[in-house]
Image (tube, rainbow, N blue to C red; front, side, top):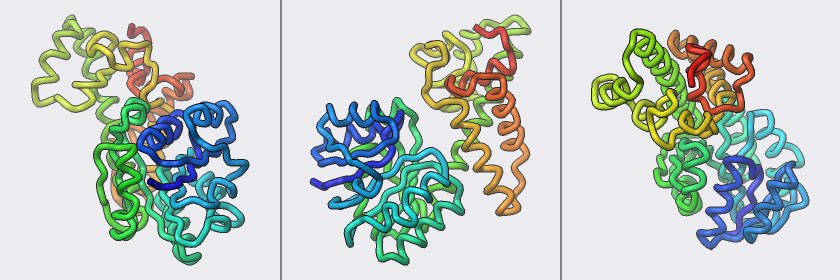
Length: 296
């Protein structure tokens, strides 16, 4: 088993780190939240005094951070790259912009370190259950070396290509998910306003051409799917403000690639308005409240 430094142990990183401990790995953890660190210490982790401390004396460093600026701050300068022992492998599971991901890859390589970007899909439910999907970018040999660590946290471990390609796949996936969640909300609201019960809509759409993972597992109408965030007062799940972040990343990537994404742009605008309305901390399925503010 390996010694792992884990930086960023919040809603996603916390259960991911806990699963690594359960898999038999030895962890040093760091987060700005003392409460989050205490939770992992109680589960058997060692407390790191700083980012630099978390990167020292370990075989791997795993990071789960909010945005690209955080990732660059943690890795560059006197951070992880300046503190890690030779031979340490870096795994960044943050969902960030492609440019920042590639920049950190290049800095790590220039300093003699191996790195993959490995953003995840599956939300807090997948993080808790160790069933996350990891979308990985970097050299194939480094991916193979990191795979046993990822298998302690996820079920589907996918090699996507070179540096930054995991981020590309993640933002493409979430652009689809956000767009489908929005149009699903529109369809269910329309059906109900025309007199069809949401249970009937769910029964038919989930077995017809309009079906999707969203319809089957995360339908935005309360009561349509037992156990879904919508049926649990929109408790996340995957927060609407995080979906907005990913939709913005997709739009930035689309601009960089000169690739048209009109539906993705519409979804980004809708989620922006939804977050502006004060619903950012709710599950992303709460976007139905933008379509029908009286939904319940």
